[in-house]
Length: 218
Image (cartoon, rainbow, N blue to C red):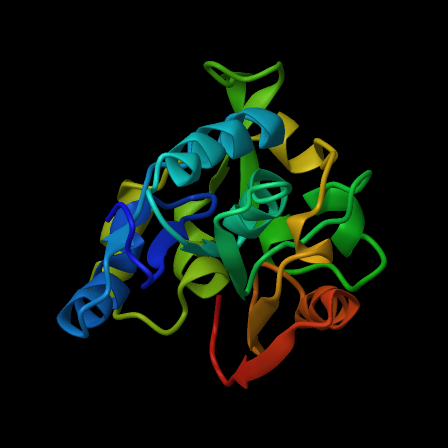
């Protein structure tokens, strides 16, 4: 892709999932002729996760459209700051904290989501994280919290294979915000049970994003 004028689309997944969640989107984009990369998001800490994504984006030989879902939005927010090849940021029901904010703090002023009641910590420390437990979504609340629109059998597979988020990552403050200088688009999920729709709207409007709403879940 070196020297290409068509942006490479880099898809960054969020917590409780991996890049396979973008499978349908990747098929559509590649069929339409786009080059897509969906790197793993370590989910260990905001700074380290952003550094991992930043390394991938920096290695792309051309412009990049950086897309983040859920916690992945916080990652692309920090990872994109100061990267000259990032031409746009796309947030899919995602966090977009300002510098000095965390995913936890930016949504704190709004009504708590269902996730607050269905997430639970592990009794052990999160491997590779700064300290504290990992977070999982309980099986009895996974589908309604995370993917209420998908078939129950697919939701069961997603639940069994969910990748935990280190609790430390959820409370870690961003140190930079690429959306302050990079154009952004935001897709708001009106029936989101993981990130309050009111918080999504606040973040999208604060960024001055081109906003689109869907009548769907997280």
